Amino acid sequence: MALGNGLRLPSITPTRLVLLFSLALVALYNLATWKALGTLITLQGAHKLAFFASFGVFLWAAITLLLTLVSFRWTLKPVLTVVALLSACAAYFMNEYGITIDTVMIQNVFETNPAEATALFNGKLLTYVLLLGVLPAALIWRWPVSYRPFFRGLLNKILVIVACVLVIAVSVGAFYSTYAPIFREEDKLTHFINPTNYIYAISKYTKQRLGIKKHFVVQTIGEDAVMSAKAASRERKSLMVFVVGETARADHFSLNGYERETNPELSKLDILNFTQVHSCGTSTAVSVPCMFSMFPREDYSDKKGKTYEGLLDILQRVGVQVLWLDNNSDCKGTCLRVPNRDISKNQPGPFCDGNNCLDEALLADLQSYIDSLKGHAIIVLHADGSHGPEYYERYPKEMERFKPICHTNQLGSCSRDELVNVYDNTILYTDHFLAKVIELLKRNQQTLDTSMIYVSDHGESLGENGLYLHAAPYALAPEAQTHVPMVMWFGDNTLAHEGIDRGCLQGKTGQADLSHDNLFHSVLGLFEVKTSLYQPGLDIFHGCRPSMTAAQ
Image (cartoon, rainbow, N blue to C red):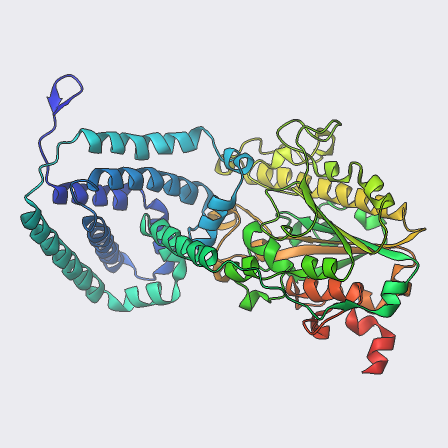
């Protein structure tokens, strides 16, 4: 076949094409794998070089084996094309953001919205896709392949597979003492190997989705739930605003000792700041449904999150008015059975530009809703917070206190100072937004027992050890992605009416074992909901109710 100005590519067999493509994957698409491998082994000198050579041959054989299974006449070129394009994208995100690819990351991809997806597009991603995706795909389609008769081709594939297995065995056997701990204990490396990382993750995610779809019945929980007679008959009703934060890390809150003043407004308010709180997950898709679930992190799964009711269902069933307002991707299934709405990006006012809204847009017209309340109520505000990589779009220009900033979604091209500056500006705006929430609640505390709980869904990596953004596997995630801020505020009479000792509660703010697991039971406790699901030991407020403690 002619290529360009009369240059002809010689015919190639499927086996040779697969071998060449697999070699390219090992050499060009797995830079993150090689980098990670270098940090995991302790060999030195010639032994290290020999092991790296062994690992390269091992990868080449493993990928060749995998692709040989689909190297038939009607599947070879389409499969290699898809692998080239997906591997180019995977290589970009692993190289530029230091991320690993597992089932949770694939879940994030499939559950993201167009706005979040487009925020990741840039010239460098396009370059990766063109050079490592489109160009190889075009070459694959222009290269003539000579296929053997079916049975001869099948025999050849069997021989290739056997040869690959032997090569893998020899490679691993030569350095077994080095390979064994890497694959047995260092799961992180397998999340880097391109393309097996995303192939495995996509297949596992698809299996989970099909299992949920096949057996999708939302199970009712807390059918025995009832609000205490005292709370139900109370003339003053309770109003809680529960703010679900986004991507805020606790160590960038000056309330927690951060050297920069990122909480100038909250620090002047009578808040309770909990310093040692950890998230259920490292991504919104996991943490948001988990924090409203009855299941603790160790027992939580995506299937359970989607097939069991949660906290909001119980509250609504016992008569609490529930409203979910979203300025993020969506509620990840948490709000499907309660009143909910997304903030319109085109709403009039200073907070929306048609594409994005600042979090203060969540408060527009909220007073009119509060005025219409007839009973106890909880309003969940799902904020956009510090959502990356376009941090500079999460706050108004007047809140840009820390400069210079990173003004691109190519985070690796920014200096450390620029990245930290722009991120800290988002925390500064979160501080301002929460102060506005408290201001709203203060205006209503003459008629309602008002309260606010703020907690972030997860944290964020800002280039430490070459890692950016979030969604790292939980067992491997750095503290920056799991240590989250949690702030509470209560109206003048709220705690007294709830029978909660504020001094006791203040003493719990430094408690080291708090997490998203506490939220389900603590909110049930604040609304005085009795159910067999309620666990007093996980209710932050339980031990600070003198009457309850004395009754035990």
